[in-house]
Length: 153
Length: 303
Image 1 (cartoon, rainbow over the protein chains, first blue to last red):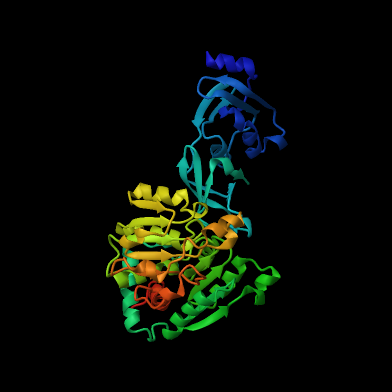
Image 2 (cartoon, rainbow over the protein chains, first blue to last red):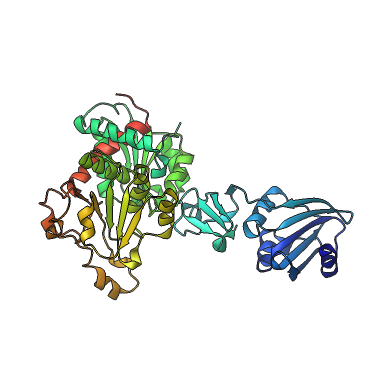
């Protein structure tokens, strides 16, 4: 029933990735972290679609592209509730939930302006100390970066 | 090789802390020795801190070690734009241990990843200053004969004061009771209160420095700095509320000792200095023995 509704709202892809259950407010964050704005693949997306779980959700469909682990980690930081469907020949061949990793490296910026990672060429590293909502703890300056302040590099 | 580095007070377990305190008392009995003979220690002060640098360099000298380094980065290639990584890589070739102070937070952790020799953090911005915490612990241990079950009153700037945050974390191993006395603008950050809640360590917050000090074993004073206030009128209102005077110590416990990381401005009246409960100058001397003990552990030395 739900699947039918989505088909009506955003057209299907033949081969590619569907990212579903994105909170409506997070659609453009997802687009940014996945670099969709500058990719040549066919993209369709919908926002503020009705969702029983989230109230309003967004969905992104990318043709002929499959996400790599680092992209999934980035997605996890901005939209941990998202679900990934791998589509081949109009069929869902694999469903993945997004797992918030325990450690995040080289993906997010530390919120602390005095942190060494914001001044010198140091790859950022965080322990994930909270998952709903996400809280990152910088391994260098030890400051916390919360979900609202996560900025993806 | 450098997994003995001391970057953050949380790098030390309860046993590590007790181990260092035990050897600090041994260094207090015998500060002059040859334990660092033939060793070169790099003392890298990317920002000036005379007190900490002299304490470290005294500790090293009394153990017979040699020191290379700088006391201010303006005379080094950092001012020509050299990265911290390159400076550390270069110094790493020359020495057996790096002691460093840096204005940026996390600089010491990064240096410990880049260097093959161990690193001791002598302060990284507002983040950590673990050797100060260890000397505070040694002072508490020495004056109270124990670290367990003490009532600790912290006064002043509890929001930005890194010494109180690190002391809070370190003392958490030893079932303390905390009292926090500060103006509303400078109260203990929620992250540290949550940390104590998680460990079920009791704490109480107060606005005034009053009778609560009568139940204290340790009174840890800090400076309320004018530049921390957005509203200077607020500063004027509170600046004299957190000043300790000799008369206020009349009803306090016999074993109470007053600690302060120094420098003090006016938060401890000079009439307290002669009271035997004033311990802040002895506290500074303990820094040398504690730093000797930390170097001893970091380099895995034996007597």
